[in-house]
Length: 216
Image (tube, rainbow, N blue to C red; front, side, top):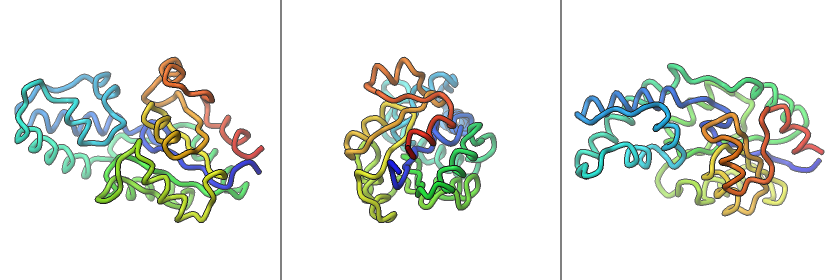
């Protein structure tokens, strides 16, 4: 077997979370009196965590106080509505089931707050994932390798027997910073051409392509 463990990004890789993030963001923008955003703008702005999304979503000249207020309203709203429209991408559950049957360990990491990530992981994947690690104190956000290294340690695997799978330039950087092989997926928040421009060398368009790549 080629690898012992597969580490996945969450948003845009195994879960389609964009609609819930976008709705919570626009709710918060309205609440604090700022202009709302189009879905395409939110799509381009995700990937570096909710705080960075807020920074990218406010007009130039927005005060730090207003930005902090927006962040508070947004995160509170999203925590309560993170699963309204979110869904598992087609083929993901079958792919994870095959990986588990083949004896691989599986994990998910995210720049999503840990308090939001863990419930989503349990709700949508149950025991198909061994561990989920999100943003929290003392764990730097991706593309820093902190969450990857925490997962590797928890799984008891060696780094050269782990592979990282994600959908964005942040994920490509995370894999590089962690020293892991990487597979990019193009069904999420970034398209194939963009991922290739960012240096992705292995890009898949269907989850069923993943199993043979990591097991043979």
